Image (cartoon, rainbow, N blue to C red; front, side, top):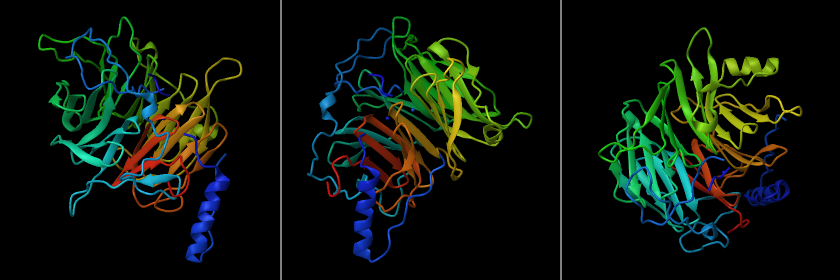
Length: 404
């Protein structure tokens, strides 16, 4: 299923909850910050039985869509008092757990990876360490056949059928691989994986395998001055974003491979003087696309979104919000369940939600609006099952109300 990453608590309800907390503490509630205004192919996981890698493998049966949270599960799940539930993590004594990405199959099947090389799995009640890759991990994906893919430092790719039996997959590159997505498959693309790496590398796999059964990757090289951070699959389209260090033309970069098998084309986000100046000094750290007209870009100093032009021409870009982030490997992420249900997680400890008319900050289980933990990734299996992960933290969207 192509998912585009909740039915949230209303602003009035959120403020009422906050006011209750403040009353208990004897302080005035802090008001919201003033507002300024990755269909990614998150495939549903299949049953654990998975065919060996080959170009013509048949899809497994999709996971039960009803497994997303329809009723709260009290067994081992933390009590939630705000928009998000803080789930306990298996953090080593005296150590840390820098969660860089998360992939959600259902309410009882969530995967996360850490820069320390650990693979974590949520079973609906608790997190456990599923595997230690021994190398920094930056991206995770569950494909249409139920296999879990991991990407990480030094060109590392791993595949675990059903989330077990992990094995390395040759990538042919030594650059860090930081993000992965899966697009729609058809007769010419029996597999459709895209991976983005630092140093301007993009890897694509459409199903061809070598004599050993390993994927044959096609590699696009955007050049050493193109630092790529994010890849998003929307149907058969593939988007990548990043920044250029070319002194003659610096700033944010957005590329589209329309149809998934043609040339890469640079997509302009310019339109007004404010956006022109903004994009020249920006780093587009995350891209999420619903289609070619509805695209979100999260950067180091703000958020841009495109909408369809009334005359059917090129999409119209607008700046939605501005705020700063820190200089980290994966400083932000964006995901949506639809064009009007988009989540943005940032390394400034903020989670924002777009409901089709406004971008608002949400309450976390750590307190009001901003928390100390940096967030690196957001993903979900549908509107009511959304997760955000970061430094020593994994938050689950609370759709049941305070205390659930």
